Structures are given as C-alpha cells and as structure tokens.
Length: 263
Length: 344
Ligand SMILES: Cc1cc2nc3c(=O)[nH]c(=O)nc-3n(C[C@H](O)[C@H](O)[C@H](O)COP(=O)(O)OP(=O)(O)OC[C@H]3O[C@@H](n4cnc5c(N)ncnc54)[C@H](O)[C@@H]3O)c2cc1C
Ligand code: SF4
Ligand code: FES
Image (cartoon, rainbow over all chains, first blue to last red; front, side, top):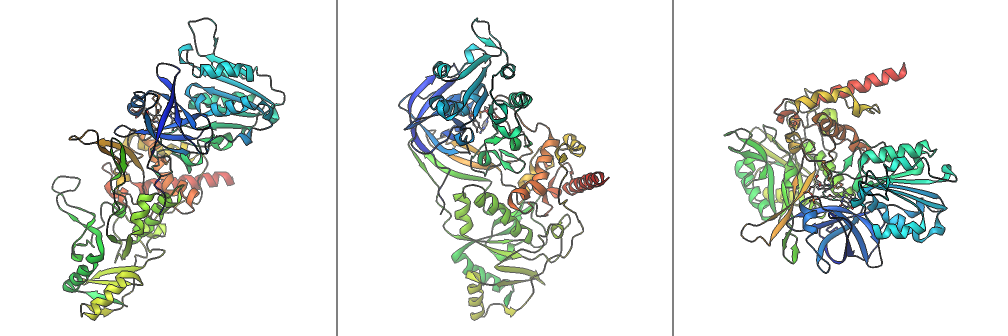
C-alpha cells in the first residue's frame, strides 16, 4: 500500500518575521531534504490548504513567506511563535544549484516572486566562490512592500544587488520596473551566464525578453510558474498546462520548456 | 464455458456474490434526473442482478464507483486527523468496454502520475470488473473510432440476451461462484462469445499530430459564446479526474470536521484562479480548447495513449447542444489544412 500523501504533519512555528502588514515569514520546524523553489501545502483544518514556496532553508527549519490574501492565509496569520501549522511536502522540482554553479548568475525577481529564489540567492551569497558573479534585481510595488529587509542588508555586501520599487513618495529608493535595470548590468560573458526570472506572468515575459536582448539564449534562462494547485501531487488537475503538471514537472522550468507552456 | 441464468438462477448467484462483494452496476434511479421527475441511469449498488440496466447508456460513468463525487480525505478534531476506513467488502463492478478502457486512464492519473494515490489504490485493489457486452451501439457512441469498443483485457464478461443473463469468468471468485451455481443446479451451461459493436453510427478521426498553433485557432471562439460553463460534460466523463479540496466543519461541533475532495470541472469559473486576481483561461472558448486538447492530444503526450474513450456522454448531456464530435471534426479539418499548407 502506498503512503498516504494527503496526511499533513504538525510543524511548530519557530519564529515569525514581519515584512509588511500582509507579508510574514513563518519559520517552520522541518528536517529533511528540501530545495529552494519547492513548496509545501500548508493547512489549517476547517479552512483549507495553500501551496507556499520555501523561502529559506536551515538545519531544522524552512522559511515560508506568506501573503495574507484569503481564507487560509488569513487564518495562518492568527498563529504565533510556538503554535503549530499542518504541512505536507516538499513538492515540485525546485531550483538546482548545479544548473548555475561556475557561471555568472543573474536573478530577476518581483514581489512575492523573491520567495522561491531566495534560497538560491542565500546559497550563492554564502558560497560566492561557487559562481563567477551574482547579480540580483529585486522589484517591489512601493517601499512599504519591500520584503526581506534584513536579508537585503546582508546581500548588499555579498553580491551586486539592485532593489527597485515601481514608484515611491519617499526619497532614497531606486524606482522603475525590474526590466529597466537589466540592460545596464555589467556581465562579463553573457553567453555563458545563467538567468533566473520569477514573478507575475507578465513580468517574467518582459524580464526574459530583456535578458534575451542582452544576448542570452533561452536555454540559459530559468523561470518558476505559479498556477492553481489543490493537491501538489499530479492528481487534482488544476495546475496542468498542456501535457505538463506544474506541481510535478515544475514549478521551475528552463525557459525553452516554460515559454512553450500554454494555459 | 459460462452459465446462462434465468432470474431465479441469477438471484442464487447474487446471494453468493453478496457474501463477498458489494455489487455495482448501471441501474435506474427514479425521479433524480436533470429535469424534475425524470429517471436517471447511473452507477449504484444493486441487490439483484435484474436491476442492471442493459438497454440504455448510463448518463454518468462508472467512475463514481471508485472515485466518489465527494470523498473524505480525513476527519479532524482539534488535535487529531484520522483517515476513514477503506470499504470493508470487495467490489464487483459491471461496466461497458469503453469504461474498462477508461479504467486505464484513471490508473494513469491516480497510480502513475507522481505518487500513487492511496485512496484510489485501496479501492482499486478491492475491485473486480465484469465487462457488460454491448449487443449494439448506442447513439452518440464512437468507441470503434477510439479503439475502445472491446477491452484490451478482461477477466469476466456478461451478456443479456432473450431475458437471460450470460456470465463467463476466466478466473477468480466469480468463476468459482459460477461453478458452485452449476453444482447446485442453477442456470444452464452455455458458451457464448463476447460481442462488441464493430462500428458505430458516429465515426471520427483523431489527428495524429496537431499544428503548433492549434490552441490559438479560430475554431475555439465559437464556444466562447455558446458554452455556459456548467461542467456537466466533465462530470459525466469517465476519464475526467479533477477535484478540488474542501474543508468543512460540523454545525453541532465546530471544532471537528473533515477535509474532502470533490469533483471539479475545468469548464467552471474559478478552476484556475489564483491570488492577486489572476485567472487563466477566462473565456469558455479557451476552456473548451483546454478540455478537448487534453482528451485527444495532451494526455497522450504524457501517457502514450489517448484519453477520450468515445462514450459520447458529453455529447448527450450538454444543455447547449454543444457537440464534442463536431468539435473534433473541426480540429481534424484544421490539422489537415495545416498539413496541406505545409506541403505547399
Ligand atoms: C507553487 C506555488 C507557490 C506559492 N508560493 C507562495 C508563497 O511563497 N507565498 C504566498 O503568499 N503565496 C504563495 N502562493 C499562492 C498561495 O498558494 C495562495 O495565495 C493561497 O493558496 C491563497 O489561499 P487563501 O485560502 O488564503 O485564499 P482564498 O481565500 O482561497 O483565495 C484568495 C485567492 O487565492 C487564490 N487561491 C486559492 N487557492 C489557491 C491555490 N491552491 N493555489 C494558488 N492560488 C490559490 C484564489 O483563487 C484567490 O484568488 C503559491 C502558489 C503556488 C501554486
Ligand atoms: S460544453 Fe456543454 S456541458 Fe460542457 S460546460 Fe459547456 S455548456 Fe456545460
Ligand atoms: S496541483 Fe494537483 S495536479 Fe498539480
């Protein structure tokens, strides 16, 4: 008899990090294999389940950065350190550091799209010798929407980092969409570099187009897709695009495959 | 060799069957049809073999004998989750050839696409199947075109001719019970062939390959205005397997409840909506394309065989008289045109 994959386990909240009013990171107790870009189904009985990306990985924990948008996520926000949430996973393929090792890596991420790649940024930030160079462009709507401020402070010293907001009333922020900053990136050899682009569908399309314009080929770019998911197990059908199941075959795709997916 | 059973002999067999099995077959549910006071033929448990409906195609497929419309994944209280027990008895399921073929599609999704689904697996392992031979094709069936008019394999088959039930089993419990009936003098020994419709009135051709831009073809637009997104075509389909998770709690004890999975439809609003107000396939034309291309092409790319089994139920059930067959013919035409254009 196969294992029942739908039964969640209880995981204790080690810490809650408040980024914005509606975006918190929950540091959840978890020991086991997990990759950046994979996701867990987080749930509270009575309310339901929500797929949430891993935004950080530690010895005995995973970070889940959650935006409060509806029934389940509202209820998750009612929980504090020391309390527990149900989880199952990790699911999906995730980002594989091996795809980027030894290369010059450009990461372009928007909003909550920073979560799935944050593990990769952290990894190469802490192991700078494993990449030729690391460029990160992170975009948010406005200064109050900026996530991971503590991490950003650390990243400043570890990589070439550009944080931008769409618009700002406050001084001291770079403004403009992430795509604006791609052409000026100083990349030593674009033909051997690698790119990761994660964010809303439109942002990914335009950011990838900028990287292509810069001389990258499609094989050099990776994206992460977000679709409706009710199981994470290749069963419920909601995440399917053509013959591809985002929950099983993705959410991370090389751009050659990812751009061919049709909703 | 099998046995030809009159009603009395069939009752004697059923008595023996029920010691081991819950028996399921297409049967009449009076007064529960789409319109008030109409009867519906669908799969349900039977207590007599004479309840089996032979002369009509069931409106819903056999899939609900393995995948209930609403299936409890677990019960929860404040500090515990509990998986419901598996059905205690084995199931004997009478079903048509196209549905035995559909079983392979359900197995594909539930056993082979990623993890095996433990709920499906445990009920599937407890199930035995009897192929109900179709003496002739029903209107809207196109099983011969899909190669599903006869099952790839079967362990037992049944026919209903001249008011008698013929049953033959190659192995297993049913074979033993039929032999027992013989020893006890019920029914007559006979040897009938398994029959199947060699052809149907409806014939279609599924294109071997589709043009790359099939998804953006004009032909889908028609459905944007016609389909009302009721989802009936999905619910009657023997190969549609989508579900949505739902948590509910009990009114008399709000601390306890259950997580369920409930049939879902890719034609119904909300199927693909995600946070941030993003919704994919907003119009019904795109949803029709999503469904139809899965049935004739996308599933095959993944599993190596076509999903659609040609039962024609979606054709029968649509309140807007949208014809799936007509749609496939248009797709086929578009594929042909694309090929000739290429050769030019
Ligand atoms: C692979 C993946 C990774 C994700 N990672 C994160 C993350 O790191 N942080 C984060 O905050 N969010 C993430 N999401 C989105 C998150 O799953 C949804 O915001 C969440 O499910 C909403 O649940 P809710 O009950 O609070 O909202 P609801 O009240 O159900 O609805 C609010 C909105 O969320 C949409 N939604 C509901 N269920 C799902 C679902 N199963 N999948 C996607 N959207 C849904 C609804 O259609 C609606 O638009 C991810 C989604 C996917 C598919
Ligand atoms: S095709 Fe017909 S049955 Fe299917 S969703 Fe549209 S209107 Fe309903
Ligand atoms: S999330 Fe259910 S099939 Fe992918």
